[in-house]
Length: 209
Image (cartoon, rainbow, N blue to C red; front, side):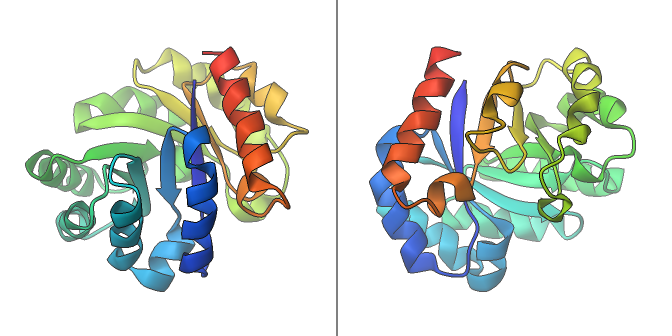
């Protein structure tokens, strides 16, 4: 099981400093949508310069202009891009083609899908390399969105990551589902001791691998 740490803030320098501290205790760094809105592709470039060997996920949440966004993020050094699974099929095809040309990988985000099981089933055909079950940040602590876990898991062979405001109090419930990875943000990046928290989640993931 992999640990992906999400950096989603408007302070790029602070994010990079925290990333340096926790680098040894995660598999992927995610540059969140808020960071991308604040700094654009420069955020990807900064992470790539500091961490040349780390896999980087750009949480682009693509719904349109897929080719242009994919090209920008690939040039910046992103390995993975997120695309909204519920968006237009023409957009999904466009992103898949652009990703193939730029050797980037696509992650389908099910947050906007009205039929997550069907979207999961279709994802591989659209060139996705992974799926993320993602609760809206503004939704609070509810885990109701995971009610569709069995349907999603049963409809795809792709790796599935879970992002759900994961913290020490709810991580056991999420780990019990045996996802391929979890995405942890503020529980690590805003902790008084980010290294301690990253190590906790990383070791938990590796114990469940």
